Image (cartoon, rainbow over all chains, first blue to last red; front, side):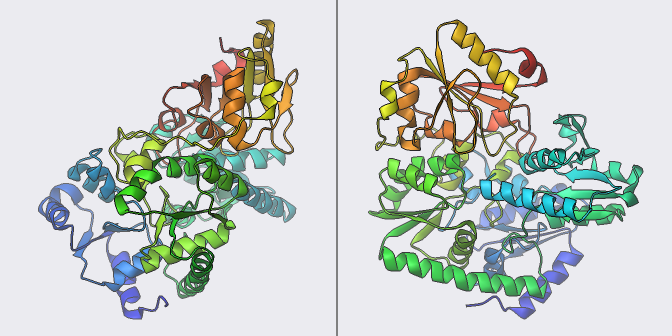
Length: 106
Length: 414
């Protein structure tokens, strides 16, 4: 039980240096991923942003869940252990588009 | 802001003053928010008046925080950047320091918050090692709770504010029902929070010190433990429910209802059914009493003159006025000090007929009391967002009133 994914950590360090934002999307949020990608230019303009779909048991996801390591990294995922902003969609408070605005705004 | 965090800021500033860190330097604060306000109060007790509060939110520029102007961070570069010190009381120390570095600021930058490794946004090896150690301790804390309450679901309330605990417990029964949870142990950070938990009918409660709680939360989130739920709304964890305020105004209570638990916005909060009647009720002037609550940990307090004016006004109308005080707090002149237990407070305000208090967690505790309830808010913004405190923390069925400088000098409640 330890954070020890050296390769993953190094790769993430590289991404954080290279990009203004790095957005990870879990596998079960395919619609949100599609929406992010289809409006990429409109949404991000010149902001250098990397969007990555997570794989099952992705080490980056585990790393993210350990602590907030950078404000540049956003994670679009649901959780059984705590409430996420996806709950607001479920509760009818915001639309999926609002959700993406919240997650991608600086 | 918890009392622990407040003490932490006090201690750090005391040490810095002792080491002469502020001598000959202009002092700035970064972040127009409650911890900054607290830091300003402590600095002013040492005769140190900050030049300005730096903030990234343009809607806050031009306003004053306790008489100190709020300006853009770039302002500091035009104003003796090398002979100044920037104090950061928020948990976004690293981001703010990075921003100052990018501006070319070469002066001192000091964190007034304990650098909790959980919230320390860094991927340096030593930070990762510290986090690993915390994970191990968090696992032990979880096993200890499970050992004492085997098989019970764990509702973890990591924030020490009474209001957060009330909100977490008010909507939890819906969540528990949806997941088929029969019995729950509540994990909180103080005896006061445990008392709230009991008022909601949860006899099994564990109190953990702040750091142990933080480690427990870290482990639960990391491990995906399916018998634990963290009822929290904001950082320092990966929980970001308050971010909705970037886009839309929603009250703090409804962040718990909709964000934490995913319930529809019109869900009614559950009432605490295990409240007690205070013996004090026999001494309170029935329906002709005013309970005032002038103290709070997390917001700027109003002046004694402001409260005295209210007291005098009501006494002239034949009311008896009582000040709710905790240890070390002094009653407002001309009032009777009272200190009912939290689970008795509802009975006291209902007996008196009117409650007037600065908006604090106590208001959440008595929010459903059957009497006239008035919550007073400082003229401040909530954290890093564009909304005022009165917008985010307003309570349904209450008179929610923002007190600006003018009102503080002249106003009395009718």
